[in-house]
Length: 218
Image 1: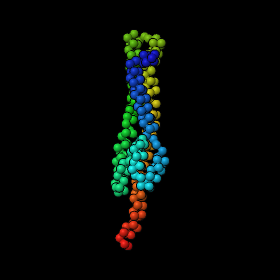
Image 2: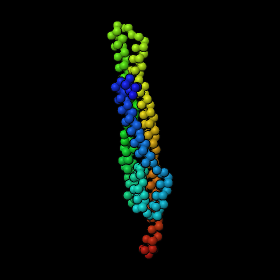
Image 3: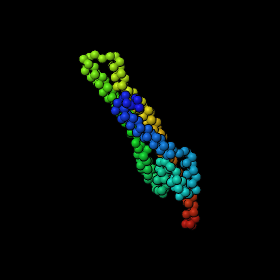
Image 4: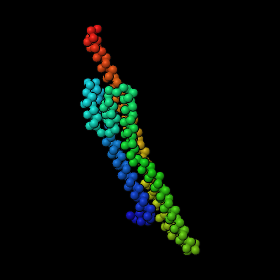
């Protein structure tokens, strides 16, 4: 509180920016934690269900799992009879719908990282102007203690702005890495589910071919 009072009113604005940044980081971190799954194990379990023809059970598994990856797979399973090209388009559309959810409110962190140093610089410039105004009012006579005290107070806002901006920039880079990892997982899951469904359909046709020939008397 002593630093806040010495730094002036802009310190409260910097404090508000820091609270917003912490709230966004905590919310996005919790979301990414809930959305992350072990894609290889999840796809392995779905592959077993698809090979047995249990598409409905595979859809239930996707509906009960959190995160964007199961939702992308569920979109393909819901229309599993479509052609390979159609399934690819379905997976791409589902991924595009999930991307904004991953990027929600992430823009706040780089904004805070960019704005808070400027707010701090504004406070410093304002403080220095006030110091020189005092010196001017005293006809250029001021003690070194008065000058150093004024400069000290003015530099507090710059320091506070950097203290908020640096962690905000680091947090943004970390969350972007988590977002990109989920995007790669969605892409991988989409490719593999399309491959599984088309391979199952091809195997079913091969198995069904002899029975059709027998029915036709060949």
